[in-house]
Amino acid sequence: MSDSDYPRLLQPLLEEALTDTPVVLIHGPRQCGKTTLVQKVGKERGYRYLTFDDVNLVAAAKTDPVGFVDRLDKRVILDEIQHVPELFSSIKQAVDRQRQPGRFLLTGSANVLLLPKLADSLAGRMEILHLRPLARCEIEKNGVGLLTQILRDDFTFRCLGKLGAQLAAYVVAGGYPEPLKRGTERRKKQWYQNYVDTLVQRDIRELAQISNLESIPKILQLASVQSAQLLNMSAIAAPFQMTRQTTSTYFSLLKNIFLVDVLPAWHGNRGKRLIKTPKVHMTDTGLAAVLLGMNAERLDADRSRMGHLLESFVYNELRRQASWADADLCFYHFRDKDQYEVDIVMEQNGGEIIAVEVKAAATVMEKDFRGLKKLQSAVGKLWRVGIVFYDGDMVLPFGERMYAVPISALWVDIEP
Image 1 (cartoon, rainbow, N blue to C red):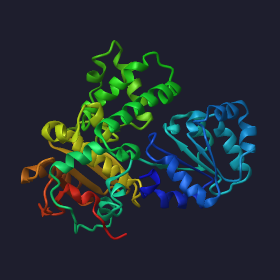
Image 2 (image 1 turned 120 degrees about the vertical axis):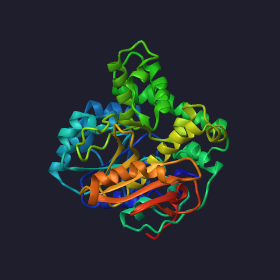
Image 3 (image 1 turned 90 degrees about the horizontal axis):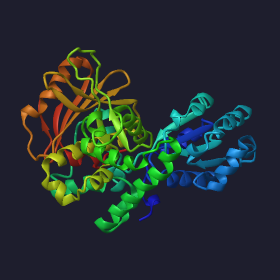
Image 4 (image 1 turned 45 degrees about the vertical axis):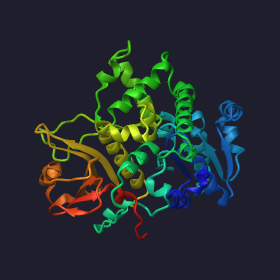
């Protein structure tokens, strides 16, 4: 199966952006499918494809950025644009001379928004779409996911039933197209190891002049240990002869290439008793599992680790579904000093709250809703729905707009 065999549910948003915006940027981690998507869309529209993974092309663009842009075709895909930030001002000039929708289609495997030249030069001229690794509904070619359904206020959940050991298999599979195609655990592991090596030696080396590159994979592994937990930078820094500030800088590089997410604490009511510490999530549980030495069998047996990686799995599924859902969602977690907590809080533009707890168990009880009910009380009329995902086979109501929902409902087919 090739990458193009997977439907990318972000594609309609990309096609729409190309009809009215001069520059469209798709960014996301390496190997998540950006190139496949832009080539597919570009082929249908007559785009020429150029990649800055080609060192000769990079040299030409850096030497004469103005001339390089002037000689480009009418419609062009510039892949891995982060390698040549020198082009941004030339692209701006080209757009200002002729504001043609869909003129430049860019991809980036690093957060180019952090590059000052881009922030200054393309403001108001560019739309940005974030492509993440495959969601489960894309892998299974099965609808658009549960989040779209919830945003429609449709709570007639449908599910595949209890997953059992298969749930751990889904978690360790992750969403990168290439390892999903590999037939053995050994070959999948080899891909991830090569992937991390490439990121360190190419992207991180290029993003920052750091002297201790060999520490980056270990910091990534320690981030995997903390996935779905409160971020403890001191614990990540402890094994190294580096300051906490230096370790934080290295950790930020991993965020900038989309390998880790930092989930801020929700503070909607500005309560003094709220915990402000963010959580950390690995952005793909397949990568996290390899870094932790976990296959499906070992993960299923280690219930503590399974609980944390399952929470990150659900978080990533919701983030991926949010990227194509017709909604402006911000993601948080909730925790107060009385130990009430909610794993994932989604705040829609306008303040409405969708809140999620994640359990690896096959049973659910009233006490599993205590954090959700505390948050519901805090937000009042802004409450939309609270869900405890669990590995069961029935949807169960637990009060007003409160449900226990099988995890398999995340990716069942729904009407478009």
